[in-house]
Length: 312
Image (cartoon, rainbow, N blue to C red):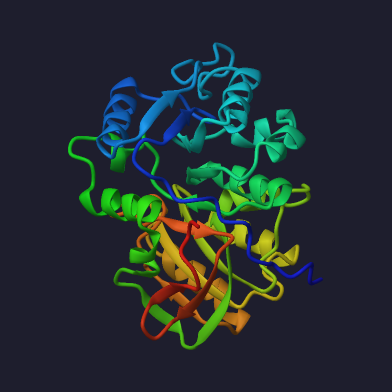
């Protein structure tokens, strides 16, 4: 059952020195020291950083969440609808982003105009929601209170790739990094995907965006092979992969022996070009991958080439 064909989304504008960006917590609690170091890094790029009012909260009823659902949603909405904010960076992933989708006023956020969303892991759900409700492209990349940006020292390659993507996106239109082609060929399409478990959790919701006409970019963390098999089977059986033109596989950190091989074996029958080992997702270095932007996958070269810069 092939759904609507993906089309390229509106690209938010690139950042310039002096821009105001917001850092909010939509998922797990933020570690104060990591947040402080991540904010200092953004400051060093000439950005003015606003931290959400509830960014360091913890929900007493659900300690795996950074504050209550209403407070986390309010911080995200306030940042997005603030005309002085150019980009919204999610502090870290974890769990809980999907609980916010139905609490957000998408009409008000649409009226605020295109904004840039940056994050990965369970922020995948917000990428899908922003694409569905707002028609805006976004960045699947490092977050200020995550390990690669917020630890000492931050991962230099991850920092530089994110910085170039934000400020000079023409310089990183070719995304490469020791990826290996497992099914040969070239394919073009709009980049879609993220963390497999988060994508599977959107099935049956209005925010699920099947990969028809697109190039799927996929990764995960802490999902052992039998769990990955179940998640991929869910996506395959519900038609998420119908019409996909290519597949790019990233990191499978803490997924156990044989995880990467399991994924390539399960998707090999799709009959489209596949590369594995592109460093994005829960890894270091962590490349920034734009979602909603058209690209060409060259499995032989192990590269993704964006048809236009990630940001306008």
